[in-house]
Image (tube, rainbow, N blue to C red; front, side):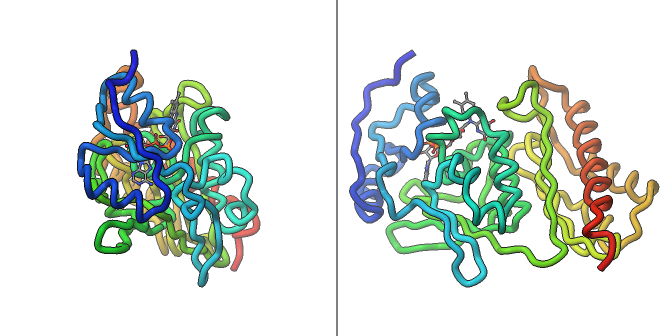
Length: 290
Ligand code: FAD
């Protein structure tokens, strides 16, 4: 199918993009890499009157450390996350996760800002920013505001952004000594959307978790920061405790049923990922003492 007719404006600056969004309101759609917007328009799931192309705005691109925070511009492409030494050093969870996003052709165009604004509950990067306790920076007609990633995702394809705002950057706190991460997903084929996935960040000392953030995806209408993790923190993790945490996790989940999996299967896979994550993180020799 082809998209319905639409007008096209290429923004010359962030200010210009915001002016265009202010004029056209919810009749406009922002275009970054177009890897989700264009298919949705071609399938006529979306029919904006005007597309505001921000893809040429260099001010929204790049990765930099500022005051102990890693700032990732909204237009940073998936391939840039894969190749960046700063990401490898300070936020390796993002690098591992992004290698599971689609295929090279899509990763060459798709952006982190587009992925987060799109808010697909089966997407890898939203769960990562929740696990990383990142902050989403939005700019609108009245200036900039910062939204905790845990409050940013509101439902399927729904975020805290309003139609006159742009997502401009993501701020990722840099983790300290003893911090480690885990990423795994079940997908039918590499590059497919996940059936269930887990992006986790942990601080481990002397064989115990002093912090554990479990960001599950494809288990509900938005990424879930699992409260069940609390059971495993500052505790001697044994089989019994892990079973308790797994039971608490299944109660927290409200997974969808679709052609990929039943809700029961998704609940089961989430507990498998939880067990793998805990076993993997506690077995890392570099974190065994401290
Ligand atoms: P766009 O398509 O340009 O925009 C997406 C949405 O976000 C639009 O609604 C747009 O208006 C809005 N938007 C974009 N940028 C901004 C901004 N800065 N501020 C405010 N709103 C904005 N994704 C995964 O996560 N995992 C997968 O496994 C996966 N597999 C895929 C397989 C295929 C075959 C395809 C076609 C896509 C797949 N995707 C997958 C989706 C895709 O990778 C991402 O959703 C995409 O990269 C989003 O970034 P983009 O820059 O292309 O966003």
